[in-house]
Image 1 (spheres, helix red, strand yellow):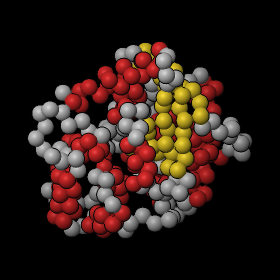
Image 2: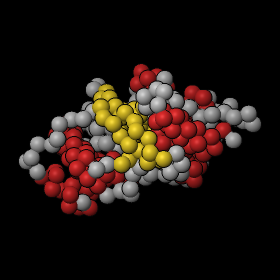
Image 3: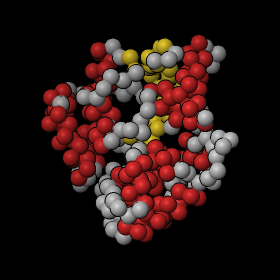
Length: 281
């Protein structure tokens, strides 16, 4: 890795990204025209200290996942993304690797949902990005690291979620996630990161191992369903959760909405305001 060139490219692009272009409120006291270091770190899901060391060339081995996250947060073009991977000492991910790239066209779609809770996963159900309304609704995601960013792990082994499930609904949800991950593994047999994830999940969770080895078909897909979210400040909110599949890019986009004119819509709006207001102070 050319440490100086990698860090310099990240710093140059950070200085050129308008905050509003990535959904960061500028606020009245802002002086910098680009992104602050802590803002880019939050968007990329890494610590500010680690980003500082990368920019200064003191950390020399960013993972491909970190490079991808930085490329996405910086809104790099395809050619710029390829260059960033090369400067980090990685080959650009090819067709044998699970993609986590959010293309410009998909990003434009997400930008139009900037006031709606939205979360994007790759085909392994690993978090690619979550917007500010999603974090306001479900809790902060920027501190998640490694396997913590994987929804299969979070459902089977992670801390309690704000989503309220009956035991049967939770069991069905887990079965669907594992079945989808198994299909992903069949499409990307050469992806070493995916194989490592499956191995870790098998070792950590007997429930995962049983579902992975099961011959029982999973419950029918439920891509449009209602969810109850127990928000700590506004109480329970009943929402529609629609999961959209971006076929060519193999992404899963979950969008949370409430029926207009209902108490749930009012609670959702309040939860978003409460969760995002600190960003503009």
